[in-house]
Image (cartoon, rainbow, N blue to C red; front, side, top):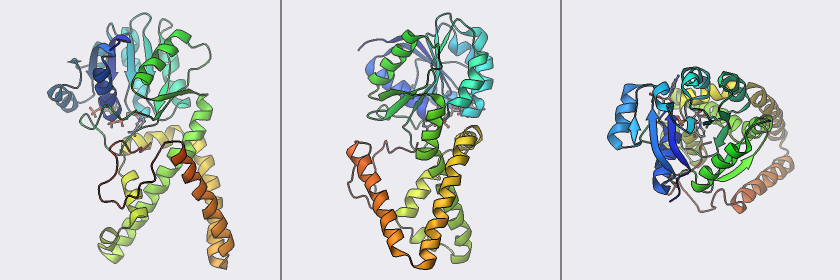
Length: 311
Ligand code: NAP
């Protein structure tokens, strides 16, 4: 048990903050964990389940004397929260965030912070479709990637120390340019979420025609989409609004490919379909070989692991 930070302030107490608090506790990585959330309800739940050592009412209060401050609110709320904490940040503190989009967060949060703190943006590629103070678990980040996107000139020591914290959670830490991060995530997470939302929306429209058949006979493909499309609406609204450029770029390419597949189906071009599906199957194999999923058969009967990535 090695204390990495003396006092950690968690701003927002949902899935990610809750999981960080539990992982810090498990590893004895923080001297004290102070938490705060916007609503009294969340603060009360966090207090009841003993998520942090101390729960306080305001973000300004939470950051007092903290050597690490973690912004765990939706991307669209990062600016307002930073405005509230900026005058209260301790000299030498590190401020980080866990937002799913990096370029926009850096542009919003960076200029609001005083010079006497280090800002090291981060993003854990781990999540579930659940949210709120009860949804966290200490193992969430194990064997999952954590991407740091420190802008040029960021204090190296601060970055190394934050890296050590995430590594102690069991995460695989990588550093990346924020633009690159946003493009990669648009491909691997943001566009797939939008597609899942769309597919479930289409099925919902159909349901009105076919009554409850969509639910009753829902097969694995559709069930997987419904899990993804159950993700938090506020978080995902903010992701699309703040990663607009990269998401639109990927969706443009997606639409072109979709039209090509549509044409192949119409023209009965089986070779095109077969070759395409052979190529995509290899990607799945690559993910399994990289240890980011298993090939255990799962027929939707509850065999899914708790930490299944929604991100
Ligand atoms: P969550 O479980 O929904 O919790 C969000 C927290 O933010 C709650 O405590 C909420 O307060 C607070 N909040 C919401 N709107 C706010 C506002 N306008 N002002 C101040 N506080 C506000 O969310 P989460 O899944 O932990 O996500 C937190 C961050 O992590 C997001 O930036 C998200 O992009 C990122 N992230 C999420 C995942 C994932 O899969 N979920 C993965 C990686 C990164 P109340 O409870 O009081 O409403």
